[in-house]
Length: 385
Image (cartoon, rainbow, N blue to C red; front, side, top):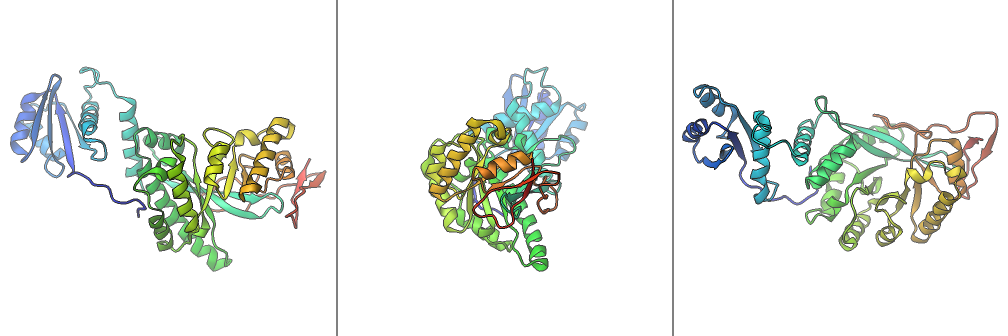
């Protein structure tokens, strides 16, 4: 399931490296169409993936005093000038001789291997759901979908995976993979929820700016993917994460408009931190503005943070965007944020991430209570002071 136009790929190739040039020469004789590249540190053999196999290399190696070698796939997604150098580095690492030939592993190679391992474990990973709550009433608004990698041999956080994808120009591949997994899982839950309650299941999904800015991104194809799974675009808010600065806001604004026309909601994440500036938000005109947790934390006793939130509230009203305060951890933060006019909230006190969607936690058990003021409130949450 993809929402990007297909890229052009070269025929799959593998690259083998060994310091034993005679072994490489013998293997070359047995692999049709292969080519040798002589290096100071040894020899490379490049050939089609279905011909240059581990089995073929092992058979020749056993007859050649078992030389050490490394065999890797050539990544055709990389520029042609880079793909063979990258593959060579990987082959040397696998051979176990990197230190001897002065090719210690680079950060990018480590990231590439980590991502390859991540994608190979496609059936291992989990989707967690965290409720986003209407602060005035305690009612559920939607669930944010949080993707959790499960990599037993190489545990990684999702932020590490995202950064690796950005550094190796694989953000598009990562987002397409994650969105496909989340949509499939959400469709299962939506079907069960409609059967039991009649209500649709609403979610938010994170995307990197790199994907939205990619020339192959297709908003209509994403809508078809969603509808094909049995969901409606109106059930989904797409969150633009802030790991990257946006060099040119015009193409991003064009994509956001296309998504909004198709029925998707659009959120700017981490407002007030990183690259999510007022200027960017004004240009994109999102339906949701998510206030960064660094602003939420300790806001009860911080006049400057309160003033910034008030500015966001006024700003959101002018562009018809709702505000979500992230990282809420205390009842006092709930009360302060709602009193400042923030409509929606997310945080541990309202509901922790869970493999199954959960209802929001009730806020307010204790001796002293007060109601959160809100013009929209019908059944205010009680909050312990």
